[in-house]
Each structure stands twice: as structure tokens, then as C-alpha cells.
Amino acid sequence: MKSPQVPTSASLSPDWSDLRVFLLVAEQGSAKAAAQLDMDVTTVRRRVAALEKNLGSALLVRSGRTFRLTAEGERVRAVAARMAVLGSELSRSATDGARELEGVVRISTMEGFGSAYLAPRLAPFLSLHPRLSVQLVTAPHIVNLAEREADLSINMVRPRAGRLVVRRLAQFGVGLYGSGIYLDAHGVPADVPALAGHRFVTYVDELVAVSPVRWLPGTVTPGQCRLTSTSLMAQLAAVESGAGLAMLPHFLTHQRHLVRVMPEAVNPTRDWWLVVHQDLQNVPRIRAAIDFIVGIMARDQALLLGQADAGPAVPATGA
Image (tube, rainbow, N blue to C red):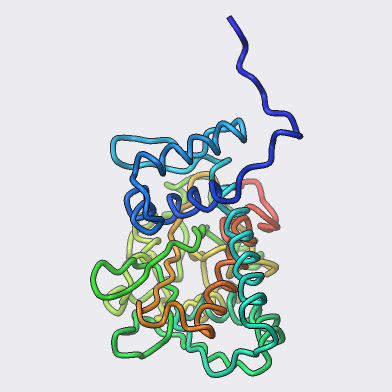
């Protein structure tokens, strides 16, 4: 019986069209990808299977009508997303020549993500398009794109209605963090029961407008929350000063002097969704912003999940 053939480095040259099909399947599912590509679902699945054979790795694991990406699938998706950004740039260069984009792009997102992640990464976009301006709108609620409150939105809730184009940008992780000041005084919890001896910083629950940010109640009881705020940046400042422990996104704590505790036991993830009105998706200034955001978030997936420069790990000492 012949052993399965392992692809050599010379054979690992996947067809870009297969990568594009896989990227659409990973972001939208087989049916929507087929409709967008004007193919039948069987053909789409055959193209993905051809890519898997070419790479010698499974990219999708199916369960009934749903699927999840394997670790290799996530890696290939990130690479394909970067290639899509580069392809779009090349296409625009060929068709637009030296014409510069101009105007305003209004981007709506949540305060913590907009302030800690997106704003520090917009300088290259502004340099690339000197006649474009960005309005970064941070709000605790999801804006109404139909009313043109923003050109595009980046949020944790996937809209199910309206004339909107939706794509999953990336996942991000959330961890339990505290300052050295707090942990020196109160100890590092060894397990979830030990959290009963600690105090916490979190959101004002009745004022939460986006339910996926309720990541703390599944871990601790409300009575332990001694300080609450509608602002994630205020929560971060409170934790840094030693007010307590808090569930914070990894992108918010990157390169800050905070310690992540119990990473194995407390490690929820959430999705970021990019939403744009159908009428605006191909407007050049909006398309440029979308491509830029897709590219940087694909590049930073490991950081968003807390897998790159995630900060020091400390041994549990008990409460």
C-alpha cells in the first residue's frame, strides 16, 4: 500500500484563485462564497479540497452543516487575507494610475479597540493617502450605517438585517489581568475558586449596550466587583493603579506593565466584524480603508489572541 505523498517545497505553490475561494469560504461560508463567485457549492468545496491537497494539510473540519478552521486553516486564512490586500493595491494601481483618493472616511468602533489598537496603526494609511482624512468615532453602542452615522463599523456583534456587507475580520482574546501592586498585596489566584478572595473592576452591567463585553460574570460573582465603569480605558487605568483584577482584551494590555493570571483557565475569545453599507462598499476611499484594516488585523492575529508578546506569566501563590 502506497504511503500518502508529502508535498515537496517545489510543489507548494497554491493557485491564487483557490486561495481566494478558501478565503471567502472561511469568512462567509460555502453557500455565500459560491454565490459571490458565481459557482455552485460543489465546485467551491472541490476548490478548497484541491488547496488542501496541494498544501498537504486539512484547513477545515466539518460538523454537519457547519465547520471550523484548523490551526493551519487560520494561518492560511491570514496569509490569503494579506495577499488579497496586496492584490487590491496592485489592481487599483493599474486602473487608477496616479489618481489620489480624497475625502473623509468615518470609522465607528468601540472605545478600547479604537483607542488602543486602531488609532496607533492609522499613520501609515494617512501617509499612503495624503488627501484622505479619517474620523474615528468611538461609541459604546453600534451606530446606524443606514442613517450614514458612519461609513463602516468594526464591532463584536454581527448584524442580521439591512442592506449591509459583513465580514469577520479576526478573533481576539480576553484575559484576567492585574497590576504588580495589587498582586503583591493580595496574592496570585491559583484557580477559579481562589478568585472569591479578590476584588474586580468591570462594566456597569445595566449600561452595557453590546452584550459580548460581559466576559466577567461567567468567571466571578457580581458582589466582588468593587469598581465599575462604562469605559474600558477607565477600567484599564483602575487596574494599573491596583484597584483590582479585570478581564481585559490582550490588545489593550500589550506592552503594559500588567500581569496575566490563570491564562489556561480564563481565556475567552470574541469576533470582530467589519460592516459597511452595500452602497458604499466599492467607493474607492471606503475600499481603501477596508483593505487596510483587513490587512493589519490579519497581520496582528497572534497579538489579538494574546499569543505574541503577551507579557510575563507568573506562578500562582494563592490568595
